[in-house]
Amino acid sequence: MESAICYSQTSAVQQEDGIKLLNQMNLKEGDVLLDLGCGTGFHARDAAGRVGETGRVVAVDPDKSRIEVAKNALDSNSPTNLQFIVASDKDFPADDAQYDYVLSSFVIHWIKDKESAFKRIYSSLKPGGKFGFTSQDDPKMHDVLIEMLQLCGPQVFQETAQSMHWKSANYYKELAESIGFEVTLMDVAEKTFSFPDIEAFINFFYGVFHGKFDRTLPAIDGIREKYKGQSLMVTIPRLTGIFTKPVNV
Image 1 (tube, rainbow, N blue to C red):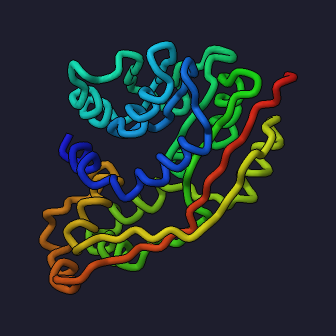
Image 2: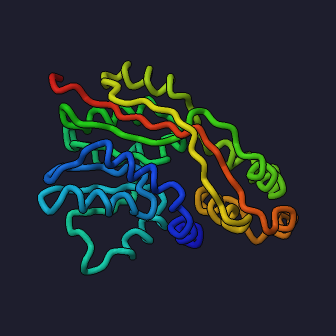
C-alpha cells in the first residue's frame, strides 16, 4: 500500500502525456473505454467525465494496492460510470467488440507478451475502435537510477531491470499491422521529466517499481548526499501510438 500511495502522489510527471493522448483519441459522450493499467485512477476519472453518464469506463490494474487507492479516492461527487477492477492484460473484461477505446498510459513496457495482449485488445474493440498508448522508444535506464538500484543489491537490480520490456516504435507498428490494426499515429519525441530534488526522484521510482526496493536502505544514503540540493532531469524518447480497428471486419 505504501508504494501505491507514493505512486499516486508522485506520478504527476506522467499524467500530462496521458491527458494529451485522451485529447488525441477524441472521446465523446456514450463511449465505452478500457483503461489498461490504470494505476491509481487519474486518467480513468478524467475519461469518465468525458464519456458522460451514458458512457462507461472500466479501469484495471494488477496491483491490488493501486486499485484500493483509486477506489478510496472516490467520493459522492465522483462519476458513477467508472468501475475499478484488479486485472491485468491477461484477464481484463474482454467480451468481443466491447470497447470504443482502450487507453494504456506508460504501461505497455511492463507487459512481456505483447502479441497476446495486442490480440486481446483488438478482439475487445468495436469495429472502428481505437487503442492508444504511451511508452518509451527502447530507452536506456537513467544513470542515477542505475546507480541507486545497484546500491540496493544485485537481486533488486536484476528484478527491476527485468520487469521492463521495452520495444521500438517500429516493433509496435509491425505488430499492430500483423494483427489487423491500422496505424493512425506513431510518434516519438523527446520528453523531459523534472524532479526538484533527489528525494522526489527516489520516491517516484519507488512508486513506479511497486516498492521493489527499500527507499530507507542505508546503502542509498550516499545517493542522497551526492545529489543533495540538485534538481534532476530525465529525458526519454516518449512514444505515442494510436491504432484503429478497421470498420469493415
